[in-house]
Amino acid sequence: MDSQSPFSGSGVVPTYFVSTFYYFTPIEDPEAFKIELKQKAQEMDIKGLIIIGHEGFNTTSSSDSREKLEAWKSYFKTRFQLAELNNKDSACDKIPFLRFSVKVRPEIVTTGRPDLHLESNKVGHNHHLSPSEWDRVMKEERDQIVIIDTRNWYEYDIGTFKGALNPNIEKFTEFPQYFENQKIDKNQKILIFCTGGIRCEKGILELQERGYDNVYQLEGGILKYLEEKPHQEFEGECFVFDNRVAVDQSLQPSEKYKLCPHCGQPAAIKRECVRCDTEFLICDKCVELETKKDTCSKNCAHQWTVRPNKKGPHQLRPYELMIKPQKNKTLEQRLV
Ligand SMILES: [Zn+2]
Ligand SMILES: [Zn+2]
Image (tube, rainbow, N blue to C red):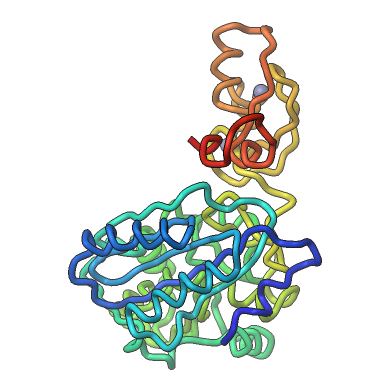
């Protein structure tokens, strides 16, 4: 499938293009691949985060040029001889990544079970539901299914599928234990989902190992679903792991949430900093904390504690550094 359509968003001229994709495929020497990737990303002017390991790769990548991002995707397809990348694409006018980083990990999505091996082209597609199949099952079989959000509590909080159970976990490694505790009937039809599909790829293997064979995962995750079925069964916004914090139903960067300057969780409560008078958003947990509730940043919180009632300058956040023009400095200098 060509990626023309997802890039056409809300009429705003997009400045950055974003693509999320993963693939389970054996990589013999991840360290050597890391060097290759760093060089390629620099040559091709790509920003983002990629996690690689012996089992494959998992990335959200971005560029200020659609052509460059397409070339980046083609490089992966050629390198691993893939017909499809199953990429989830979006566009935005706010920079999602300031740099490119590669991390080598034992797993490309952390489950705590590096022994569960998977190859994307060998995955049983009978357990994948396309966004339209998923949508149909949710509408027609609602009384017979159990829907479980495999993501963390703060991801669930800002948006999820109608009727989905919230495991209230801090990290994905806690999911199997949560599941075990529910004592769900082994024949029950269960639907699981995550952001881009990768957590479910491994999650479903673990559930199958525990004897649950009537489990289905949303192919391409919430991001693919929203691309095809906005304003249907998913409610709210979808948390993403970059500067956009979340994307809305049209896959546009969230207008509602920023990251809490104190703890990094999604924040939507508006406050004005007592030290620098900047308006900011804070999360519903930090807003309860005396040392944090009135300050826009870690710096202001610290300074205000050390010198109470002493005003200070406005604090810039990383994305503001990108937008605010600074005299005599190139973009790269501003990022250092
Ligand atoms: Zn917070
Ligand atoms: Zn401040």
